[in-house]
Length: 270
Image 1 (cartoon, rainbow, N blue to C red):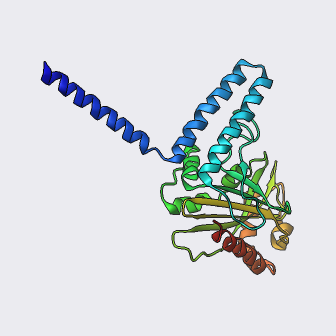
Image 2 (image 1 turned 45 degrees about the vertical axis):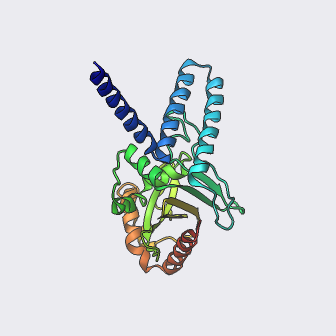
Image 3 (image 1 turned 90 degrees about the vertical axis):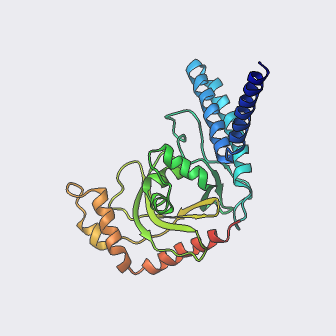
């Protein structure tokens, strides 16, 4: 009888140790996502129960809780022209509402109001892609994913779609760093044959992810604009034409230089 009790005690102790070890191995990103899942469920329950004013109040309180966790997770920012602390990029946890479903991170606006920045962690970025049906376990898959219009639409998260016109070549001398730049335009509907008017640069180094975007002047590509026929051509065909002919345009080198400048700026971020 004594031996049986001892064996049961050993099994129980082993189980408790394994459970404790599993909990201790949970990453800070996992803890945040677990917190977000629970808080989101509370908000959705409040929406279903009503009144909506109470749900909205709980929603805003929940965002502040998540913001506090994200600030600890991401840490303070040190980029000239931007504040040290950001605000949570999500505007609501209420499903199917504008401002929900975006990337988990902190949002910053430059002192002059001309530049926007989102900072998150590589773990949260990877989790967001996986949750949205895009597995990015390898860095080459992640590098491709951060150039897509769907990614920038989720980052900016203001109800308008992002239309990607072209990638711009950028380089970084930091080992293990991923850096990608694109030209894009936002709109509720197709925006062709208008030229892109924003530049976006995403850089991943260490555990941090930086996405910076700003307005920019890009000249029309005459070959594409003059040939575009709304009844015949699509947004996608216009974008392909633009990307094909952009390197031959007079402002191409200046665009690449600006993209590289942003890349270098983010490489020095801490």
